Structure formats: structure tokens, C-alpha cells
Amino acid sequence: MLLNLIRRLFGRLWTRKPYPLRTVLADKIPDDIDPGSIYLLGTTGRPWAAAFACPCGCRELIELNLLPEGNPSWRAAVHKDGTASLHPSVWRTIGCQSHFWILRGRIVRVGDLTDD
Image (cartoon, rainbow, N blue to C red; front, side):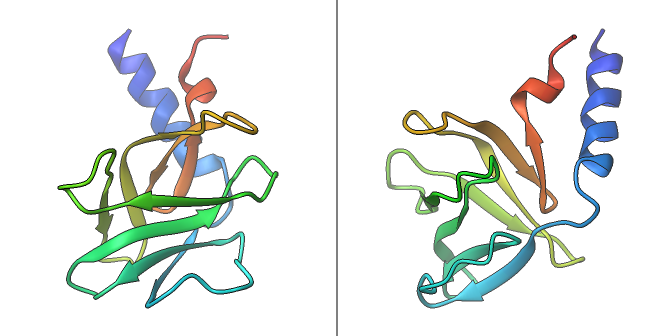
């Protein structure tokens, strides 16, 4: 069962979108958000926030705190290939109520991991 879950996760991870979100290091959120990008705000050594358009299609701006002393907070990792991952998952409690992970720049929806 665990092996099936892992296979489904990675199968969807690589087939969900033909390209990963582009990681952009920035000092502030741009006025016009590119839905194909995730913005890491702050210094390159330690970004303090992440911002991106909701991947469900509603295009609402999602801003996440990356400072560990904040609550809630997420962790961002930028990989050698330039993609980013966020942990834990993102679950919007208002609006579209999307629930997903960003793993190596790809969106993995929680519903994609459940048995059909």
C-alpha cells in the first residue's frame, strides 16, 4: 500500500505539468504575478516569504511565511536544478480551498494521492 502511494505520488509528480514552476528570487512581490513562477522573497541565503498564484486556476495570490519563528510557517528548499519545494503542504481554508504540495517546482494535489 505504501509502495503504491509512493508510485502514484511520483507518477503524478512527473506527469502533472510538462514543466516545473520557475523559481524567482526577489525583494518584493511583483505587481503582475506570473502563474508559472514561485517567488522567494528576501535574501538568497534566507528568504522570509514565498508567493505564487494559486494553482487551481483561481489565480489568487498565496503568500506564505518562511520564518521559523512565525506561526504558521513553511520551509522552502531550492534544489540544484533551480526548482523549489515547500513543506508542509499548502491548504487554502478560504476561496477555492485547494490543498497541494510544491515538490521540485511541480504541483501535487492532495486528491491526486487518494485511491479512486
